[in-house]
Length: 388
Image (cartoon, rainbow, N blue to C red):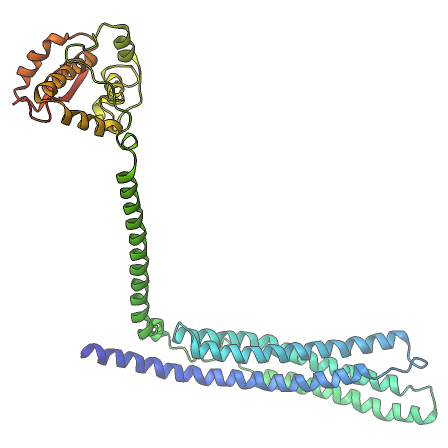
C-alpha cells in the first residue's frame, strides 16, 4: 500500500514538471508556426518576382544578375524555413507525447526546438532582408531614370521612400531583438534539476509486459530446439537399430587362443612398444609425461589406441565375443591380456609367467597396479567377475 502511495507521489510530481515543459513546448511551436506562415508568404512573393520578365533593353547584365540572385536567395531561404518549421513541429510534439523515455523525451524535444529556433530565426531575418533588397532593385530595373520624363519622376519618388523604409525595417528588427530577446544564459528552463532521477521512470506496463513476452519467446525457441534434438535422436536410434550388424559392431577382430599370446621379445611387439602415439585423454595426466620421450606413457597411449584392445569403437564387438565365450575362456583371455599389458608397459622387463605374482599382489580380481621407475598405471583384471 505504501508502495502505491509513493509511486503516486513520484508520478504526480513528474506530471507537474511535464506541465511546465508543456508551456515551453507550446511557445516554441507557436514561434515555428509564425515563421512558417511568414516564410510561405515571402516564398510566394519571391516566386512571383522571378516569373516576371526583366526589360532587356534598359537593364544591364550586372543589375539583372544581382536582382535575380537576391530574389532566388530569398525564395530558397523561405522554402527552407517553411519545411523545417513544419517537420520540427510535427516530430517535436510526437517525441514529447509518444517518446519511450518518458519525461526525458519531453526534455529532448524542448531542447532541440530551442536550439533549432536560433538557426531558423537567423534564416528568417536573412530571407526578409534579401526580399527587401530584391524589391528595391526591381523598382530600379522597371523604372530607369533615363528612359523618359514620367519614368524618371516615378524613379525619383518611389526609390527614396523604399530605401528609407528598408533601413527602418532593419533598425526595428535589430532594436527589438536586442531589447526583447532573452539570452540562453539568463533564460529559465522548465527542467527541475532535483527531479532528474525521476525522469528515468519508463512505462510501468511496458516494463512488466516486455520481460514476460521475452521469456515466452525464449521458452518457445527452447521447446522448438528440444523438439528438433528429440527428432534427430530418434532418427539416429532407428538408424542404429535397422543398420546392418557389421556397421553397428564394426569389424570383429580375430580371436586368439589363450595360449598363443605374442611374446614381448618379438619384432612386432618391440616395434609397437617403441612407437610414439598421441596422448589419450582417457588414460589421465600420468601418461602424458612420457609422450615426448617415448616412455611408458607413449606405450600406454599406443596400447589404448590399438584396435581390438582398448579402443571404444570395438567395445560392442568385445562384449559380443564375451557373451559367446564360456567363463573359463573369458578368464583365460583376461589373464592373457593382463600379462601382455604388463609386458607392454614395462618394455619387456616382465615375462608372461609373472601374471600370478601380480594377481596375488593386487589382492582383488577387479584391478592391479603396475609400478616402475617411470610411473604407475592401473590395469583392469577380470571386469566381468568370472575370476571370483
